[in-house]
Amino acid sequence: MILLGKGEDKNLAGLVNKIKVNLPNSDANYMNIIMKYIYAFMYEANDSVVNAEQLLSEILEEEIL
Image (cartoon, rainbow, N blue to C red; front, side, top):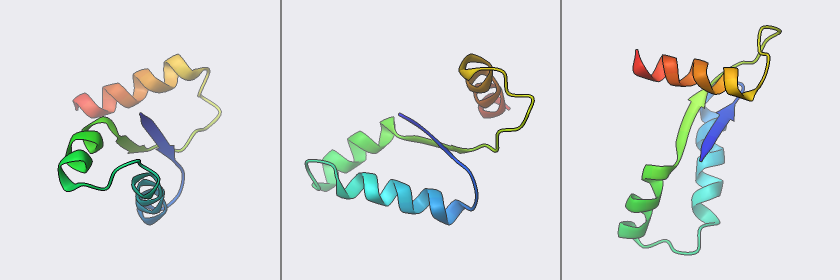
């Protein structure tokens, strides 16, 4: 899952907490496993964003650096 947030880090942290609360299980082992599949990246879209493919390639490029 990819979460794209706009704004402050605390807003994204709040969203991740809401996702955790809505998961079917709150066991610590389950949470450790499932959180490996939740990826968060702060990105503010601008006029240069053409499509989702370009957006994702920018994000992946940033992650590699």
